[in-house]
Amino acid sequence: MTVHEFKDSKLSKRLKWAKHGTFLAVGTGQWGKTVTMNALAAEAPFRGRNVVLINYSKDFVKKGYPSNYRAEKWPGKIADLYKIIKPGEDFIILDDAIFMASSRDTQTKENKEIQKFMTILSHNDLFAGISIQNTSLLDFSMMQSQDVHVLHKFMDPVALQFERPSMKLKQTVANAMLVHYWKRYPDVNAKSWTWCSSKPEMVQFHIPWWWQSTMSKAFRGVIPK
View 1 (cartoon, rainbow, N blue to C red):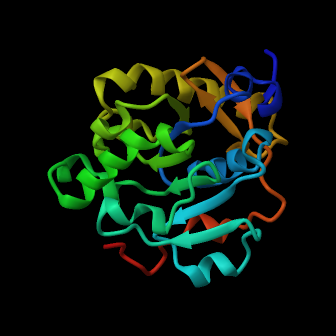
View 2: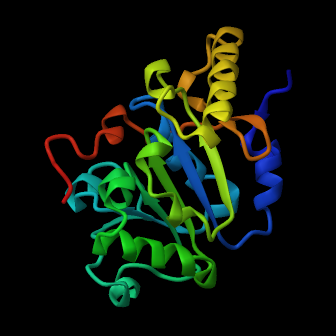
View 3: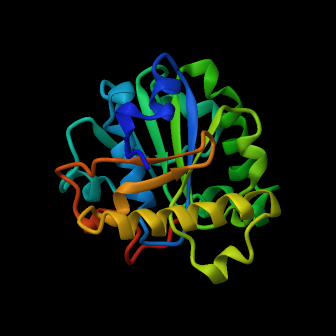
């Protein structure tokens, strides 16, 4: 099988001239969703953009992230969105989206505001990366108005049983492909592999040189509101 680094992937070619889009990273915790989103943000199509980490602690971001990163608290009203987001300049990362876009909180004010934001994402030339452990946890209405690229990390077999029917087969294939690549390339960091079911293809992301394992635990000791 051919190894596709991101720069040689079909996904990269698709994004070459894109000005907006949404990436959904899905998989069990600690299998690399967060590092994949940050690795993606460092790739050529987005390299000139600032990266906005939603609801991260500002002190946490200052400890080791590059200078183009910043932490912003999600505004209470969509009207205040442009106080934290810069159209055409930002790559937004919403990590562990269950705290803001849970399938069980569809009618909450915050969830509705996120849905509105996703609707106007393309109007503002923005990219957004969203991570969730299982799509059954995510309010899918927020994904229905955008060009969505699904990036699969490994999902625990028990969790897989509870996946949405529309995603279960894709995740089953992803799990099999990931295990195959881990065995074939044992010297490559397992978290660098990502199955993109939107194409479909296996993509190898380069983990940023500045990345530390603690960065995948931004909410350690903190319960986001």
